[in-house]
Length: 282
Image (cartoon, rainbow, N blue to C red):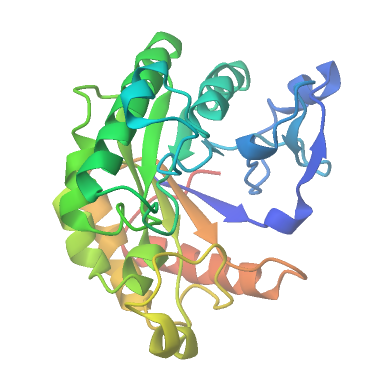
């Protein structure tokens, strides 16, 4: 059984968690996905909350880890990275709201002043601390395909082997792998054993013609899923995940203001799941 979620970022607002909110999280009927943008997490413990549904996501989102830290290379052992404290803070929140996955990524561009080897070494040390904490809380730390390192299959392979832990996995993104100039199907095939969460994202022909191979990620697509040039790849990937026994979430990523693209995407995804013989979890 594969779960799918409908993503409408614009409906999410910043609010403190209250007892009322913690009670509402038990209602899983909504298809909205809650994002905890930890780079915006204030000291008072506020977090992103869906006022309309109080729904909790299957994945929280954390800050890029490849940003140049405000330290010298010889001071790396202090782990004073920009993103690490926010990721560490998100782990107990994830446990509290019964959210099994936290997404991390590398940032869109290669950090200036570092070689690939140096940047990877920084991230390796960061993930070592993060995953050690995640294991205690039994939370998955997923690396999202979104930036300079993570859209390069060989570099991503190195990242996914930073630590030997089942808690370190992949957040596959069909749109980001495509816009980066990769073959999303081959990308999925290579890393399918590591996939713990999936972003389903189509890409319009105009955007593909203008940006494919020139960018590493798009936050929200303005193409309904099924209408773009990535639709055939998405269908093949879903079938591959089915055959591999994936039973996690398919998180729809497209512009949600007003609803038409989300509704059209949902119809296409439901139809595709039905045609592929995949049961929809309601």
